Length: 300
Image (cartoon, rainbow, N blue to C red):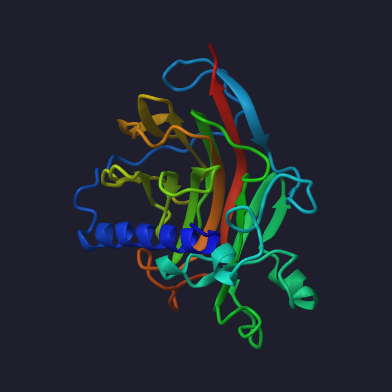
């Protein structure tokens, strides 16, 4: 299947799943009591279940290292970045998302780039910002009304099984859709492993795994919306286990098709069939603050 068709298929299937979840009001989800924020800490020696870990990837965001001209860490478009239709690389129209993911390589915006740049680093925290597109630029942006940012390790890191974690503070506001997730390095879909997602309300987060063999219902967990939290997942041949601040919140068997190298993504989408569109109450810019992203192997 072509890159374009595969991306549309991914967006279409994911949108259908999310629409089904929304239609049932997440009645099948489990909600646990609110978690207490975990303080920042260095790389882990052990997973929450006691298994020893070996650090394989870490970005503490003392600076931002976009992947450009064969160097760097973070790709800022989907898939492998090869030229293709605009929305295949910079949005997921199958989800009815309203944002376009921008970077310095987007054509026709060089003069406005400082005002559009969705990436900033301060105090060891990467902020991905979402905002309405400036008036007069919508035509250059393919008609998209909002601009935001996406980062992926597709060109620099992928791994089969392990422990993956992000410490972050999620944005609040109608239409905000931050996520931290994993996709196959061979660019297939599914599987997809969603470490964490939120839809407009930073006090509620969701955890899901998508597979050709089916997707168990998402789990909803309450968190303090004003604090940084560590969102993590343990993935091995037998089980996938999700954690918030070191506490287990969901567990399921590993699908048979989720046994290949996967890379990490973090993005701030705007609007869509699941979160709905922004409205007059949405604060701008939306700010997804990421303290660090790390990955580990399970030590022998």
